[in-house]
Length: 428
Image (spheres, one colour):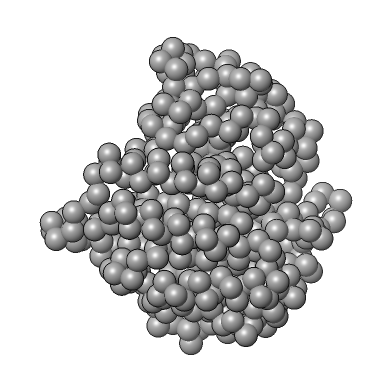
């Protein structure tokens, strides 16, 4: 179920920053970089990300391999004229990237600057766990080039934090946030989860109030998803944990919409709110289906018409990077591989039809929707020519609408967003 979201018209402050057709063509020649840091102090009960506890002893080897892969990726991604490819954003995700030292973060950013043409004003985000953040290193991290922190707060309720397996307390969230401000960070995001088993509306509203009182620049609110392979999935299957029903989850979501709007936050995507000028530029790359390169264990990429993922286990990733670099050095002809990664485990060529569908699906997650002129310029086909027949019934039911050159979900359409997205996918 996709929950409802208030509609921001394409004339809002955030939407005016959306690229036009000319800008989009230029952006297709650039990349966003995602660097996966798979280390954690403890694995949360609901988490299915590629992360590992108790493996910090591999941190130095891993950073060295990731640095080398960044340099390799830069070589392979160079433009036809031999110049480095422009990089617009960098995102250190995980796992818990804040478990790296400030020196290691600086080392990886230096490699990026050597390998790519990193924008001088690039948004550089580091995810951080409030319970694993070295406050004394924040100044150094910011001096190295990180200018945005994304903190996984998840809740201000102590019992729920313990139930999730989080290692921090509510007070540590506030301490970490104030430490970030004291270090000079002017772009700080907080993540929270709702529809947690045992979470009441009152508890959720209290979390929202405490979050708003801190004054973050960005908020991400995620409906708990029970992912197969996690302890939570096992508990639900056994009946020892009961999922929150959809109506209760929807009530929590709508309460968040109303409260954040009153606090001055603009909702720009189904799960994301920001103060004007603070929408996450890196994540907008995903929602506008622009190229990105994901490096590190389990990293995923969309580049040159292909989607590919990297080897997930840490030791296997390190070994694959070393093998790839060694093979390139001894080959007189050089590697025939052109994709900018050293440990590719799987790949898929994306057809034009599927890419159009994914661009439409991802764009409809944004409150601004899909710009019809940009879509036509990118694919040489009118949006309604591509999807009009598939969406005719939903348009008649007023689940989608066209306004001022944009197509977007209506408030009711956001209640059943997954049904709209399913209509866009190619047959077969």
